[in-house]
Picture (spheres, rainbow, N blue to C red):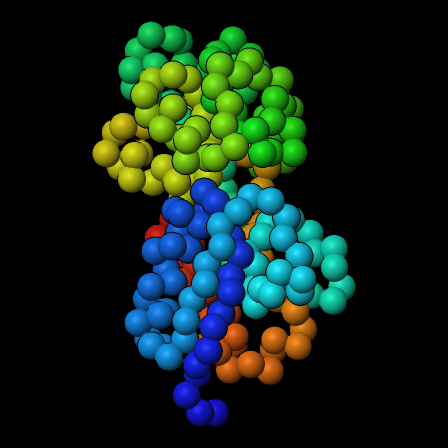
Length: 214
């Protein structure tokens, strides 16, 4: 009850924060003008309690039992390349063909040089030859748009480029290994009105992203 007010300190991964969260939070701030937003974007692991964070957006399994989790999104990664690259190279017909291509690698992945892809129950682990590496998926996307090679990136980051024709999806039946994204927060934050409003807002916003992608 009452008017939500005070500061909310939020941690998010850099590329994901720039591509999605940075666009969402101003709408939350406009809806609740007495809440002050402190967004920290960093790909390094942050300790929520020691860092004074109210919430972190993070992928992977929940290891700390003192935290609560709310699932926001299933990250879907797709293979894509620029028309210019595909005009100069024979497009891959199967995942195994990726070994003959110039690949653009997100260096923050658990196994950057092995791409795990699946088509339903069929799975493949492909060792790739990286001609470009970056610790930002947005940088990988831009390298793909320049025609440098093939990228395996979250579909949220390339939706506009696919619509405009700057990028073309390849092997469309094959996706990267799934990766879930969660809102994590200390258990005691559940009693805070502004915190509950933030979580509900994020769930609503990411549900909209999922619907638009379907």
